Image (cartoon, rainbow, N blue to C red; front, side, top):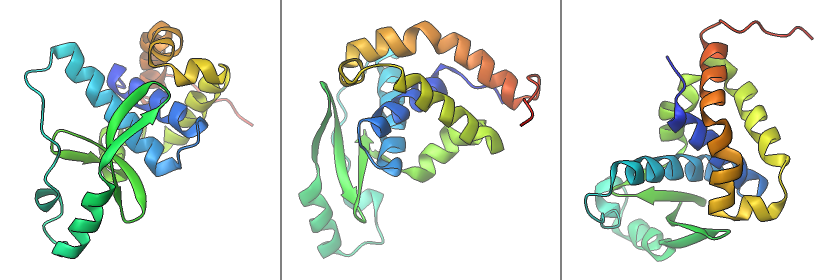
Length: 172
């Protein structure tokens, strides 16, 4: 299965968020959230989506648990970029529309494209983001223009070749 710009954006955004201090699961959530956001922006937003109804997302939770989660719902800023967030079982996760981007969603939409080679792509994404100072990582525009845009097609091609076995592995 090909790795596309969507997966490249999600992986680079997750790496950016992790380097800026978000725990791994929250960083994965941020990365998937931003990839969804940019894909929707590219297609043109049809209408603003309301925040998710927690009862729909977690029908198995008790009313008291939902009320505690509702208290954590808010806006999170990573540098000058923002996303809606909620705390679920002690983890900061991001939401867009009626979905919370959690580790399961990241695994399904992003990591699964890489299979067992995900950790290799993840390390490369981290190393790319580490090359830039904090000011670039904190800026939505600079991240997009400096880190993502110039290498999105190159990484999509490289990572597709990697997972399809067309790229020979280097031996240690």
